[in-house]
Amino acid sequence: MSLLSLLPSGAIRTLRRVLLKQGRRMGGARMQASSQKGALRACMDAARHSAAYRALLQENGIAPAGIGPRTDLASLPVLTKANTFERFTLAQLARPLPAAMLADVLTSSGRGGRSYGFRLTARAQYEEAWFDIDLGLQDIFGVDDRPTLLVNCLPMGVVFRSRAVAVANVSVREDMACSILRDVGPGFAQTLLCTDPMFIRRLLDEAQAVGVDWRALGTSVILGEEVLVEAQRDYIAARMGIDIDHDPQRLVGSSFGVGELGLNLLFETRETIRMRRTMRSNAALARLLCGGAVPDALPSVFCYNPLRTHLEVLNPDANGFGELCITMLGAGNVIALPRYATGDMARLLPLQDAQQAAALAGVPAPWLPMALVQGRIKDRPAGMPSVERIKELIYLDHAIADQLSGAFRLDRMDDGQARLTLQASSARSASPMLQQEMAQLCAQHGHERLQVCVLGPEQFPWRPMLDYERKFDYVSTAPV
Image (tube, rainbow, N blue to C red):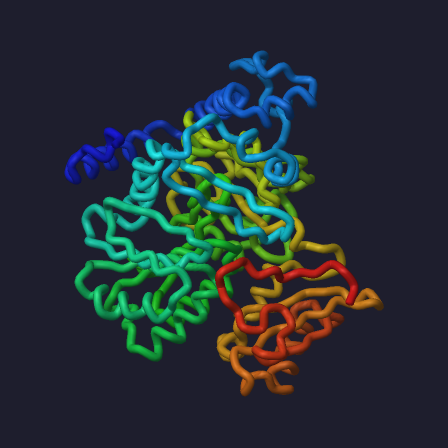
């Protein structure tokens, strides 16, 4: 049992306050310098304990014993799922550890279709995993002072513990989630709903049917698994009665994690949400955050804890966007994956730009460093709109959004023209009128050559009845 687990609740709350206060005093520059040193220590630790990492170092002409505090981090190999989990056994990747010492196993989504990555957690780490989660919950939602119920509807067996809030881990069971919220939720000062941007559609419909009162429950939402676009944030907020731009308590926020590395590695705050929303009407802010040119869909604006994760951007373009690369800090990771490329397009925001951006948005500058995430690199095939752009179009008109499930498929036909196939929320909704309205909406926003098709739930060829247990693959690059 860890020392943290032995502390009483009052001492834990005091420790959270102290750590958050110290973090704010530390400042971004000092945290970033500490993060860089921590990343090198993580690489040194991997070289000692991972046969796979030693092999990768040697293939790159690097002596494992030669890594030290003065090593250039950028000279060390970049890890991917292909050169780790698809090549080495777990015994080669992981540090030697008896099976009895393992407490938790989590897989990646398997969205690539070829293999799974794994995160193994030792019992000592598992006993303390709740602390980072609770630290974030206190910073954003003030859970130490407001009794809180968190209902976790994340798929794929993603569960977590907490000592600051009550947690109901129900996965993708909208009936269970809504029953808990309706019947148990009123006993708490606030409720939090943790789910993904697609399954929340089903939750909202079920909540409406069984009489969940989101306002009375003071419910905020944390969305993970895939990118949340602003039009969908507006849609969710409208259905839950949340005034995003003025409510000081409730919010609809987004979180970014990687199955092989950890949960909530990047996260929105009230300040970053305000920045992203202001980008829609403030071109100067959009250019500042995006490095000059504004992409077709606004990137997510996240904060992250540099004392927990070290972030890099590989091969940045002229605007600073490249592939996100993450190193988890701290000793004891069972499978060490230093400099792990996630497949997401991102940009790190310089500290001075973050301060200027906050001023343009009229909010205090976040005390943590910031990163922008554009989405999956493979979800941006040339000649087709991005997945995030299509999501924006789906949710612009709430009457249209009500008739769609949120699932769609982008593909390229033999003649090279892009096609968008959307799934209606019901067979009755799959009408020629809805298809025409969606085609007109696409044309009005610069996608007049996009062929649009709306199909009923059963006719939709890609998992016609959504199970919500896996990430949806929105893009096919092979001609059909």
